[in-house]
Amino acid sequence: MNAKRVIFNLPNTITLIRIAAVPFLFILLASPGEFWSLVLAIIFVAASITDLVDGYIARKYQLVTTMGKFLDPIADKLIVNTAMILMIPLGRIPAWIVAITIMRDLVVDGVRSISSSEGLFIQASRLGKKKTLAQIIAVTALLIHYPIFGVDAHLVGTIILYIAFVLTIYSGANYFIKFYRRVGK
Image (cartoon, rainbow, N blue to C red; front, side, top):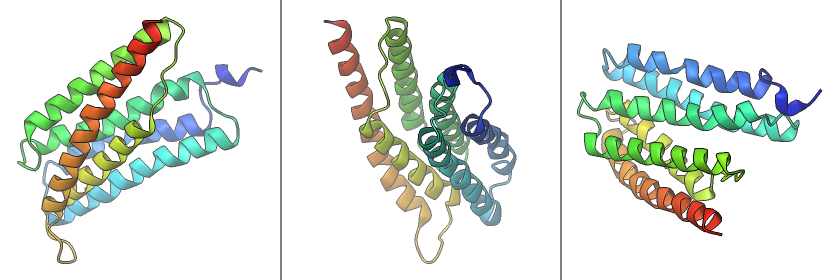
């Protein structure tokens, strides 16, 4: 049996669990007091860690599938972007950053889709992975929002969010340049 045709394996199941965490964002951000903000941040971090776990298992046990390559970046963007969108009305994140981030994600997904239809596969770059890590750290701190251990979580999250935003723009441009160079040949 060809492993590329397998849809439900352990890494893909873990990715689906990450996607299943998204409704908890809606529920818990409905009453974002100090306690529920911390609980939500813990759930968000746990879901984010599954990204490392599913990728590690897929590579180590040669369980990389086409479905996994498709689902994994969607799961990442779904959980991060949903958290960011839900924090806009709470005043925890600027709407313009969320809008530009989502537009960048749509453009990158479009570029990757066009590339794949041309038989080219543009993998996630280290820069894109750094962007995702910075977003996860920023979103976690913004979800916590309240001071914790004497640290202003909101301020820390905002600073890291701006770093993530720069990486978002830069990595998006990098995808476009890679695409242009490959298609332009």
